[in-house]
Image 1 (cartoon, one colour):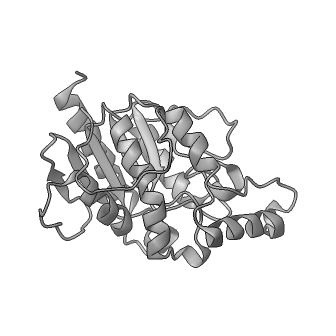
Image 2 (cartoon, rainbow, N blue to C red):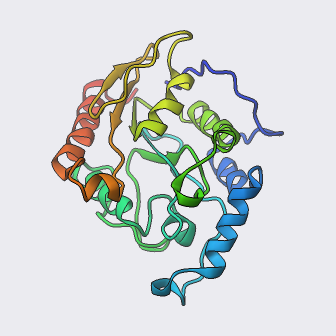
Length: 242
């Protein structure tokens, strides 16, 4: 069951017909000059602990197969995480939290993601983000989010088996909502463990983002995060694969 797209979105020319081609289109994207320049600058200057590493230094594609039933939506790659490794939620502490949780509930074959050749495989799960480039100071501008939204909209169309969507953080929740909610339906207030039944029959679950700002302060604990993916697993077991 594909997500029903309600917000009108302008697609890039020659809208990619497959997930693999969409990933390639994302990697080649140059729609936000500020973000492209920042990724290149990060890759050039690096940080001391990664001074001998070749950075990816361009937009980071999503991860997963088109037949996944769980969709996880984050904010953006980290400057020295995804922008370095070339894989979403990989090589940073947010990714450490995410993949541990995914592994616990059978959505990944291992509990860590450190580089693109580390053997990680997702199971029935697809991971994307509102932005595919790291924004300076983690502060994206509204037009940059708008530039990237067609990729998210196209993913929702191509992921025809998705039954559960997990939005990591308020920005992810606010940006996925108009793409899947009924027109003029009021967006609920973001809160951890909010669960919304969509008209498509899918479930949208909100979670605090596993950022260091949330995890170091205790705003998000591992047990709180685990409950999100325990609920996602429960939902998928209830609906089964059609």
